[in-house]
Image (cartoon, rainbow, N blue to C red; front, side, top):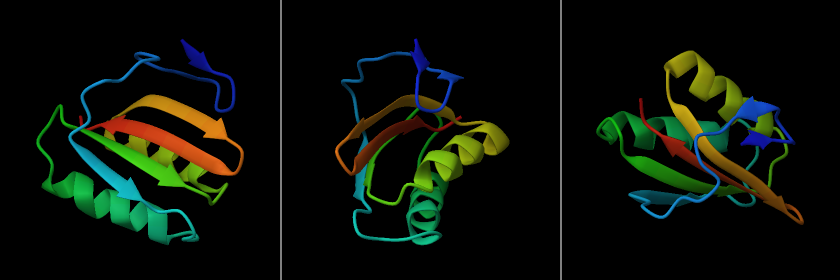
Length: 90
């Protein structure tokens, strides 16, 4: 499936096993990315994290973060002003 917002290939549109969750709503760049980066450092390969954000720059930040660090952006969605991401650690 291709996420129309970011035009990247997603592994699955349905994610059921989430290992961690972070709520970054209300935070602005670079705080959401830094919180996610610090949490992912502590995760094992293959574990997943779900993030909720309101900062539109997270679309770019999380896409680039996954690409550069070898993680998988499993799911991305937007509902109103809330962005939701699921990342699997590579």
